[in-house]
Length: 345
Ligand SMILES: *Cc1c(COP(=O)(O)O)cnc(C)c1O
Image (cartoon, rainbow, N blue to C red):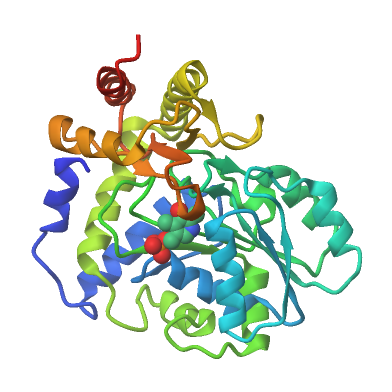
């Protein structure tokens, strides 16, 4: 996290019904819209990403939702759907295989569904599902809404909310946006706001109609994390004005290429080729190293951290993040440190 962000978090606090808070809210909205290439509504939830996933499922499904599951976080969409008692069907792929548009088309053809949940960037596997192609298919079905978890890639890759015709696009700020955890950005289409009125969601904290009522006054229904709002404002200024969106995306491309080339040289990459993530790489442990020992050495001797594989993939894979405000120089330093520890030439 950049020190300027921590400084912004420490801004003298304001009351959430004071005019200053509404001004801050009003200032954030167009910046968020520019950030997500949309003219529609962007909500902020004082919650982690999972809260907004729950909101999407509660507000946007009248008939039945298709949960596309090929990793731990897409599985969470299904778990949330079931916990909320919303009718669903799960379509599962092996975790190293991306969803193809034909698979989605085949399911939607049945006419059973009016929503689809998708994780764009699976943080558990380093796999990016082809959002653009899947969105094209979903667009052919006017009643079907596309609900997208972009938690670990929003801010690292371009996601054009309006052009893709998305209905919900959400991400907590603690990953590629590089802010402290506790706030989630959630773009919502006009038609999703309309459907939410009809659905009458069985939630108050995560109700789109309740959020919208206050949104119109530049307020939150409940007390938001104002410290985060200041931090987000500073970070959006930095992203939009100082770094620039295109340069930010190019930096993420460059970091991804560096890690992918390194992983191919010394190990292998877990997901199928063509769907490698731009923000984190899941490396196949083809050398049979102790991932735990590697992480311990990195933390203790280099003050760096990577992540072990997720769930069953523990020790079989490890994950290197290359997102947020990290630089290619940071990534080079990390790869150099790993080479030193593993004595790779
Ligand atoms: C981290 C993550 C989540 C969960 O986020 P929380 O902020 O912990 O609720 C959901 N989806 C993806 C893809 C993630 O990477």
